[in-house]
Amino acid sequence: MFSFSKKAHGFYIEINERAALMARTSSTDAPMVIEELKEVPIGDAAAVERAVKELVGKKGAGASAYMHARCGVYPPHRLVRRATLDLKRVKEPGYFLELCSQQFRLEPDKSTIAVLNSADGTDYEVGRVTTQKEVVFVGGQNDELLAAQEQLLALGVFPERLELATFALLGGLVNYHAFAQLKAPTLVLEMDADSTQSFIVSGSGLDVTRSIPQGLEAMIPVVQKELNLKDEESARKLFFSNTFDFTNMGGLLIKKLLKELQSLIGFYEVQTGQSIAQVLCTRLPAKLGWLGGAVAKELGVGVLELDLPNWLKAREITLAPAVTPQNLDPRWLGLLSLMVYYDAAASEKK
Image 1 (cartoon, rainbow, N blue to C red):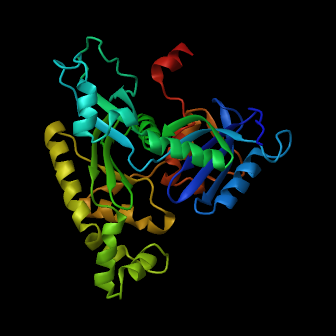
Image 2 (cartoon, rainbow, N blue to C red; image 1 turned 180 degrees about the vertical axis):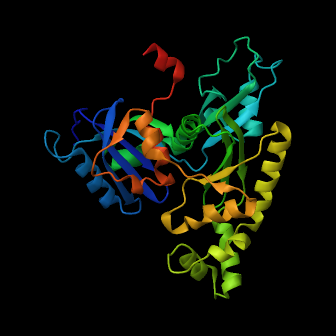
Image 3 (spheres, helix red, strand yellow; image 1 turned 90 degrees about the vertical axis):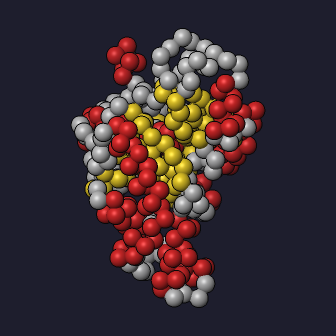
């Protein structure tokens, strides 16, 4: 049996298909210090469990204690989609369920979904008379959310709060835009195996969301053809290894994805008059970090260079001497965003 650990510290964990990212902080609310960060391959469950126990520490908690944590997860069919409401229909029974089933292809009775205001992420009050028509639907399938909870429990983690890591990251990035006083929007890409979730973020909020049916696996046949490899499995192993420099092939590898992105950006720029200035690829493993640069080069924009230590410092979160700023690459933004308190209205009350 697991016992429950004391809440002297704050614990955070993000689970994706490749790794578990974890952090221990000096408290659960700012001001606080990030005392330790850990990254463990998710395929090695025993190593993840050990890392959880090491992060909690045996003293006073017991080696088998649950780590009470704020958790970010990436369910395969997670939903983060912006939509424009028909204000004439918002009071109709079933209107929102219709949007979910027809526009987002989710079964409402088998899903957990929240409707939020696109500008600030606050709850959209269904049924209230309003002129606010730009919203974001956030959620996922119940079976996948339950599977994520069970995975965390099996690893010794008790989720005090369970969030879609994608949405936490986007909220953090909107806040970062304000901190860094970025004038131009950012194109954010989450590349999965079979799809790419694309977002346009600005200081005013989440402007655009689109799922593109082109992911990392679509690049494997190109690698096989260009390098004259015998089969796709050989190409896949080489692609995900760190033994070959694919930088010069970047344009070829993302050719199909690029067409979709150019269409997305072109439409956005015509509609808003704003130009995309930078790209951020958030979930690429270190071995594929060059892909972000390839996308930026082909689009003729820059790569967003995040100053995470100073952003955290502005939010009253500092780094312990053992946590080096050089290790905070974009892969950590989702986990760090779980820590940041950026509700302006609530902050004023506080």
